Length: 263
Image (tube, rainbow, N blue to C red; front, side):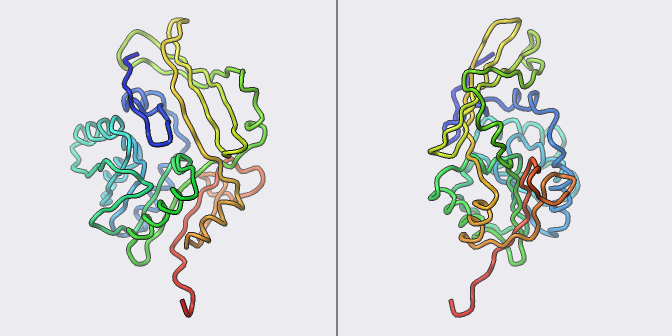
């Protein structure tokens, strides 16, 4: 496996190659229909934050929606641009940090999918992120995202345990790559620190880190409220079942709450 040094600001390394990322994420969670419906309903420009390799942005563009993608991981954007070009699409993929961005355009929908908001860890970064989103929403605009619903069974896993989580054909040739996961939960920082160990033909070839902040349901509702957003809808999965105790996901559609009278 060719090593490319690249991390996003929280130290995550798994976005080192857009080509490997796409091979490893062929089976995704059924979110395309959800975000495509929101993008069509927006009836205006759409911005996807942490757009990655264009897994969602490209089919949304194919559906006739004016969409821009922004991501901090240059290898992911390289793959997104190559895929858009191969599909005959002219799209803007911007290298930028979702925690603080400034574009000369406002959008009717801004979304960040596939748990990517969990790469934003500190209160200060979250406040900057929400402020950037609000500053780029057109009147009547919506902000949508999805994150995990933390499961205590996963958070208490043995940090020495290696669990096989997937495999994919090496895009550079030479056979199948297997991934085993080692999982740590930091109660102080309320974040998971995952190490993915890659092996091929029984031999370890690399390891990459993944960090993700946990957002507990009531905490997430409070963060949105105190950063000026109201929740319009909250689902527990992409079949739009109501959010509840057993829900694997927190899928939200929000809008700026507006200013309170006298303020």
